[in-house]
Amino acid sequence: MDVLGIPIPDAGPVFLVALAVHVVAGLTCVSCGAVAMLARKGGARHRRYGRAYLCGLGVVFCTMSVMSAIRWRDNAHLFVLGVLAVAAGGAGYLDRRTRTCDRLHITAMGLSYVVLLTAFYVDNGPHLPLWKHLPAWTSWVLPALAGIPLIARAIRKRERTP
Image 1 (cartoon, one colour):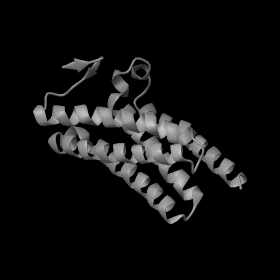
Image 2: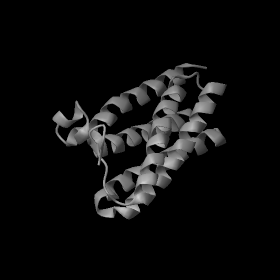
Image 3: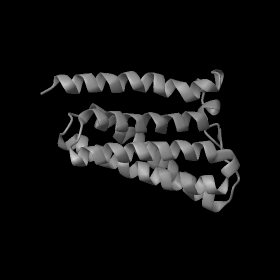
């Protein structure tokens, strides 16, 4: 089965239900994460969308775990990326809750978002219109090449703001 040119594995109904929830949660993460990044730090919008991002990330992790268990040979690398994304997001959240360091919060949350996008492109890039023409390694590298400078910029900007 194909959906918008992306092949969907025939791995049974549990896989398909997990995938449907996974897609919705992933879209929630991408949109809420972007809003949180662009919102004034510490404001109500930043906190609200940041929490929505983390909740979505938790759902993405749970559904990814189910899909990885069903298709371990094909999804083990995505499981590792999921663990990294949720660990980074959790570290960013805990840092903010303990008010330790803006730098750690920004870095961890930003890396969580970068790893989330990396997993998406690694899994789906070969089927996307522009990405399918790029070498496979670009799916692993381009999200970080775009995200890390933005994370560094956010840290510099935050350190200049009293």
